[in-house]
Length: 261
Image 1 (tube, rainbow, N blue to C red):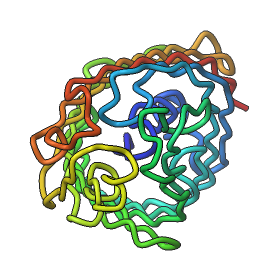
Image 2: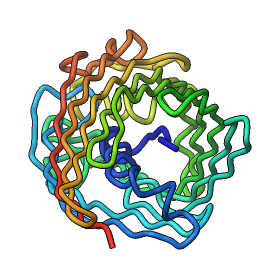
Image 3: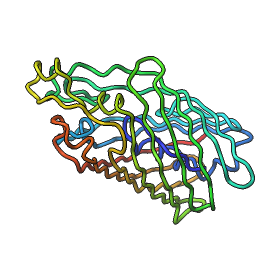
Image 4: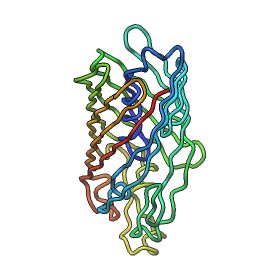
């Protein structure tokens, strides 16, 4: 199953699943573990016009329906014979810093916005694997340790190529959030406006963007593999009208080396 994702960077969870996707069906009962290391080139935060290289870990383990994932957290998924499935996760979001950061979102031009705290969250996804090459999914992510609002996404994944060595996946996701979520990430309150000089902005809830990614995974042998991924995000007016959004069209790229036990 190719699961849909929402994390600090949307490309990374997908590439980890694709990286082990070739072995997942055969090894689900006995268990499998994939580890690796990658580099990620992306905006400093959603809406930034500055890019940054970051090191990202690759970790995905599975035992039957249960899994652990470096970005998604821990969880389980269940699928019936008709292709319908449900996935439940317990994960985290690294938040955002008000200064440049090498390990999470953040930029110096956000000075005075205050940090967005790291949060524990839970995600619930329902999807349909209509065929081996296409799936659709809806997902909601809710914070558990801080009231930062709820995010949603509806996505479709196409897999035009999948064999013993190569997997190519194309995914497009519509992004939504309630007003609390959008104001956490794109809003500017009155105190924030006084500290930063940015005009005040209250973000309405609803649709706020589209994320599209193309990922290629190649297995050199039963253990070594590599993943390349390109990602494009477009921000709708609910996000783009924020004064902290400097660019509504964002691109990102990820490359990783993996080892499967």
